[in-house]
Structures are given as C-alpha cells and as structure tokens.
Length: 555
Figure 1 (cartoon, rainbow, N blue to C red):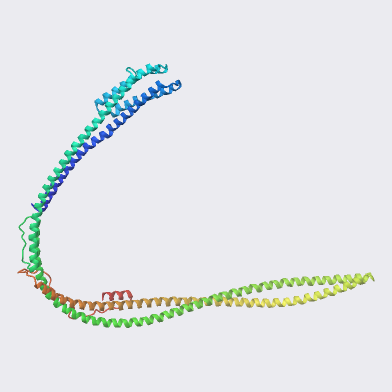
Figure 2: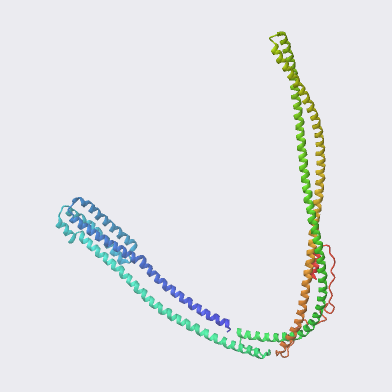
C-alpha cells in the first residue's frame, strides 16, 4: 500500500467517523428542537391562556360580589353587562383552548369540564341576579358562598383550571428531564466517539508518518553523501513500492543523467574556450572598424548641422520677406480704397458745383426780373411827377442793386464753370490713379504669392534637411551603440573564455564514473562562420532615409 492509499484510508475513516457523529448529533438536535417547539408552541401558550382564564374567572367573582353589594340600582345594568361579557370571554377562551392549546386527552377532558361548568354558571346566574336586584342579600350571598349557585360554579371552574395548569407544568418538567437525560447521554457518546476516532486516526497517522520519515531519512542521508563527496555514483535505496521508492528511482536516474551531462559539459567547455578566443580577436578587429565609421558619421552629422542651420536662416528670411510682401499688399489695398474714396468725393463736388450753377442762374434771372421791375417803377414814378420822385430814387437804387447782383452772379458762374472743368480733369486723373493702384495691387499680390510659395518650399526643404540630419544623428547613435556592443561582446568573449576554464575546473571535481556523454552538438572554432576574418557588410545606398536607418539597425 503506497502513501497515497494510506492517506486516503486515513482520511476516509476520519470522514466516515465525522459524518456518523454529525448524523447522530443532528438526530439528537432534531429531538431537542421538537421538544423545544412543543414547549414553545403548546405548553407556554396553554399556561398563558390558563392564566387569562383564571384572571377572567376572578374578575367574574369580583363583578358578582359588586352586584350583590351595590346600593345604587342604576349601576346594576352596567355590572350585569360586565358579568355577561366576562362569561362570554371565558366561553370563547375555553373554545380556543380546546382547539389550539389542549396538550393531551386529559387536558381536553378538563377543557370540556370547564365548558360544562361555564354552562352551569350561566344556568344558576339568573337566580342570583334576581335575588341581588330584589335586595335579598342573604340569599344572594348564600348563592355566592354556598352550594348550587354561581359561586360554586366559579370555584369549581378555578379548581379545574388549576388542574390544567398543573398538568401543563408537569408535562414541561417531563420534557425538561427527558432533554437533560438525552443531553447527558449525548455528551458521553460524543466524547467517547471522539476519543475513539482520535485514537484510530492517530494510530494510522503515526504508522504512516514513521514509515515515511524512515524512508525520507534514508533519502536525505544519500543526498548528503552525494553533496559531501561529490560522488554521483552513489545510489539511493529504491526497493520501496510507494512514492518514496519512486522518488529514489527518479533520484538515481537523475544522478545518471547529471553524470552524463557533466561529462558533456566538460567536453564542450574545451571547445567553447577555443571558440571564445577567436571571437575575442574578431571582436577587436570589428571594434576598430566600427570606431572609424563612427568618426566618419560624426563629421557627416556636423556638416548636416551647418547645412540645416543655413537652410533654417533662409527659411526665416523668406518668411520675413513674405511678411513684408503681405504688408505691401495691405498698403496697396488701403491706397486703392483711399483713391476710390477721393473719386467719390470729387464726383460729389462736381455734382454740387452743377447745382450751384443752377442756383446762380436762378439768381441772375431774379436780378434781371428785378431790373425790369425797377425800370418799370422808374417809368411809373416819372409819370407820377413830383409825388413819385422818392419812389423813383428807390427804384433807381433797386435797379442798381439788381445790376450789381446780375454782374456778381455772372462772375460766380464763370468761376464755377472753371472749377467744374478743373474737377472733371481731377476726376479723370484720379480714375487713372485708381487703375494704376489696382494694377499695382495685383502685381504686389502676385509677388506675395510667389514669396509664400518660396517660403513654403524653403520650409519643406528645412524639414527635409532636419529629417536627414535626424537620420544621420540616429545612424551616428546606432554606430556608437554598435561600437559599445562590439566592446561588450569582446569583453563577454573574454569572460566566456574565463568561465569555460572555471567550468572545466568545477566539473573536474565531480566523480562521474564511466558514463557516456550526452549527444550534444560540440562547438568548434571552424564551425563559427566569419570569426577568423571579420568583415563589415557594405551598406547599399537607398533613396529613403528610413531604409538607410533600417540598414544601420541591422548592421
């Protein structure tokens, strides 16, 4: 039987025992629960209802004595209502108790007796009430305290309730005693069963653990011997048929494979040492070539930096020229707008001059008419003789003023005509200036467009130069990294040579016996391509910067 089967048997027995204990415990708990529920659902409600019945009965006695002793006949109807109500409540509680609270057949019989006594009480009650209302106190008191009246019925009813109360209490005591007895038995049984299970499981566990411990100690001793003497020919005891025996057989197989592997490692370490020497020589040659190429790339990067700075300055100058051309275009546009405004103003002046000419002609006409009217007035004054002499003087003055007005209007008209001629000439000249300004604006706009195109082309050229510069810098960085990697590879090859020598010394410390090395591919110096004559692969020229960058990455 192996360890797994022993452990499974142990845990199976433990699980079976625990399940049995759980089943027994649940069964006992179910009995406890059923008895507790009986007390909770039957005994306690029964006692509670019996207490209510006793209270109602005592209240009934109190009402009966109150009816018998009262001197006020007006209170009798209310007392009789209390008596009847209390009797009805007692009857209802009896019926409820019979249906819901009766514990056994004896309790039902006592409940039927209580119902009969209630009927007896109702039968004897009218005689008592009549005697009490007729003030026959001795008869009424005799019916309460003596035999044959409602007092006797109430006393028998209270005694019956006491029997029911004692019966329910007795049943509760019996259930308590049963629970205590079962609890004692359960406690003893669980304790005994638990001890028995612990002993059985402990026996199987100790036996299994001691067997495993002995086998593991043997394995540990074997491993310590191998670790102390580095003798891989030591074999562990693999006669057991369990997991420990399987482990011992696996350990022996591992030692054989380790012996073969160490023999192969010893053979391979010699080849690795020789190959590492040649790799170190090739790495030194490659390192010198890489350093030369890094220096060339550094010079190229410096030249590209100068070109990039020149192109950047040209781009800035072109952008400045574009801004100046834009400003000139804006000024020409503003000048054209000013000329157009001046044309409109002179046109308005010419129109106003025409209107003034018309007004002057009107004034001249008025002066002419005034002159005629003054002449007519002078003729009429001459006809009037001496009376019209003053009027003739006034008419002469008016005629003189009219002639002067006509002369002034004619002179103003001549001046305005000359001004109109000058304004017309100015309008024509301003129109010519506007046409010239429009042509100049178009020319400036064309110059602005050309400068913008030059600026855009210069910006693209600057970006292209920046990309080329960035690519050259990346190539320089990659070359520097390659140089660092070559130096690291050279150092690694030297370290590999030292480690191969150290590994050969370490493997020589193990005792491997006569074993066949594993079929591992041996590494020889001649099998490594390109070690004796390291050479850098030529880089082909590509049109795209990204392709050049990729080639340098592969390099």
